[in-house]
Length: 429
Image (cartoon, rainbow, N blue to C red; front, side, top):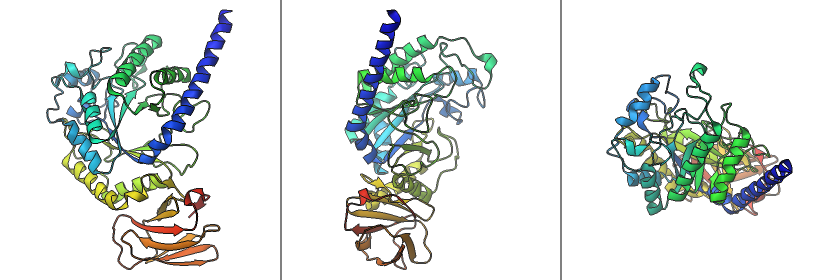
């Protein structure tokens, strides 16, 4: 009888989870994917050393040193409004903060652990201030919260580089703490999405991921959850846990069926690093364009400095992206990827009866693309209204661009066609 009740309970949980997922997909996912551009922020006491957050513990930075950095962590120049303004100036629509990374330090005053911001000299709720600033400035707010926690004595792995340092742990107690922290984050800060990472270590199972997913949805079914709670991360299937895919440090492939978001750094490291090599403006813009052209979102990461400011050079780079978006944003926001598969020469997005051809490289002033089946191009122009000559012959369309193009990073040709561009099949350019 007990086994039968357990089986019924499990079946009800599965049915409820499927209902939650379907509700999220219908109610929030299209809205989220229309945003196209988000900001990831990796921040914590490790900025005092300039090494990678979480991963440098027990590597570049000794564990005792790493775990004591919070005692000196005092980012007195942190200003949540300035962070959100920098994001808005870039044309960014949503922000995700690392409330808790794998090192276990919490940027909010949690009651579940003493290892939190209120026990640092700073003594201010960074997560809360960001949530408030996002609300004030009309920015969607999201929270990153790790699955694993090498600082928590109940988590069986304390040092991923040395298995002799691991402990027996208590994964049930660990999950109880995790649920308590998530309840705090959800009820205090009302995030639009929760972004997880750290699913790959052996103690964490797919069943654990499902349990946490169900728990989140039981508090607020509308919260979006990325796919890193479970063990399956490459596709959305019956075995995966989460609402959308998250390829890392690479642009996802064109996918018209599954929602996805690429997380990519503006420099090389996630957390702040002195003199870290920053991506050029052209690479930043083309990364965003290729992501949208693949029907995905870009979560673009910055790592603020130890004093709480985002580096001036990064703010300037973000502003330059925003300047480009002021002109070309309609070819990114609220669009679908395709119909052409992105490559090194071009990418495309589409909306209504318009196809936006993003030109990265061309042979002289000529761009050749495949013919679109049963499509008549009514006209072709650049964003400044300048006419682009169109010739269709057999299997190709030839666009003759002006000798002088307006943008050094990405020039966009608007094709106005005789039908709904969003219904066209995907074609390899």
